[in-house]
Length: 151
Image 1: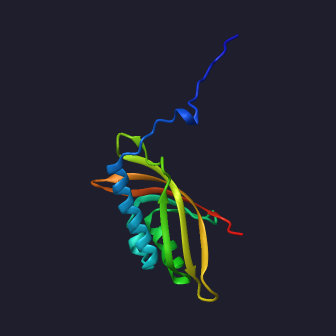
Image 2 (image 1 turned 45 degrees about the vertical axis):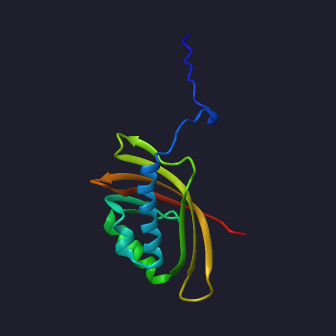
């Protein structure tokens, strides 16, 4: 009989220390995302994604490729106007995946928006993204967004 033993690190053993310079670069990307929402600018929101990106929305719809993502944002921004959009990054987030060219980051989001009828609505939730470096620029390769139901 062969026994295989696997030792996994515990949370207390986690040693990831986010790279502050890398974090600053991603903060710029997140600010551009917030600005695109506030300005209802689908082209600006889409420009932050790679050509082959995948977007999974809070309602579990999946969009493949920049063209589909731009159509999603165009339709969204026609229906609602955002007066607040804020992305934050988890304290221990920003994980390098491959040779400094791919990374993973997680965080929270909150927003206030208004549709064509009714008053302002608030929403919040969580996000997880994989970023790829294109030259000196980071772009979203995969973005998954989940909404937390506000009572």
